[in-house]
Image (cartoon, rainbow, N blue to C red; front, side, top):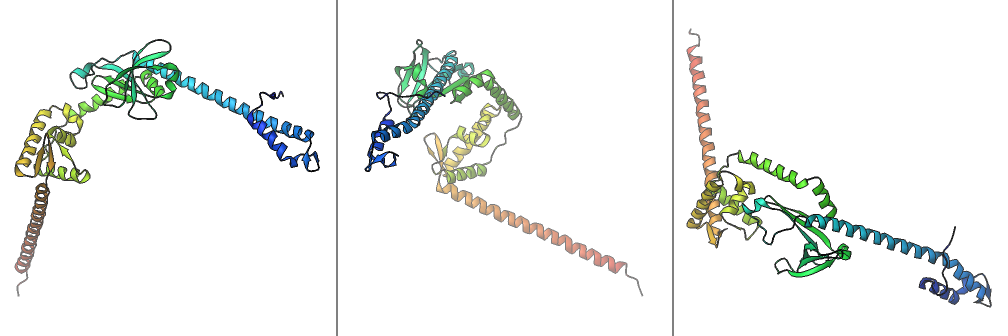
Length: 331
């Protein structure tokens, strides 16, 4: 088996230090004269350490080559995903609400800085074989600045893509998974499944919540979140989920819950803070009073039922006594 050798000029520092240490602490050498190592002992020590240094250098080289291969594969995967994303470029203004969003069918490819979740890059087009033209954002609310990204440095970023399709928005943070989802038409299946569930939901009739149920919802949500505040559409979504906005009874239910919230505002149970309503202390007291009255009503109803059953028992006992007297034998 061939063994790599190093010249004196190309020997690694670890081997040089090992030779120096063997020269200083030569007691382990087999050739010792008067407590000091001879030149033959030094050479033997260096030769014994040479295979170890060679093996370490080969291992480092192999690891470096492996990292380079992984880096190249990651760059290639990113480039394929970006190419697919740029095949459907996004418009200057992205419609996010119906009916404009119903015609959406494009991708927004993003590269995120690993050291900061705020900084990101939106790729616009492929300039040449070396770089992409893009917009740089220092944070999500900042304006974008023209920039470019070298294709050789793609592995330094985290991949992200947003897909706007037929009123839906999908996200993916993995380049390989993005390509797989495109190949298997994964998003088309999600759209079909969601529309099927919406059709089944629309067949159900939406049930109105009365005033006390709405007040209970405010108390429960406020206990969970201190600054809970909601508008009429938000309350409608909390009760009937987001699918309620595509239900045929949407306008009717929105008007109903708007009237409920306004009645609570007039009674002082809720306060209006801009477009949203918040719970007040009077609302908690009103709910407590209602629950106490409800308990009293149930208790009275229970007592009345007990009296009715007791009456039936007494009447039954009286009838049995009368029957026993009537059918008793005469002397």
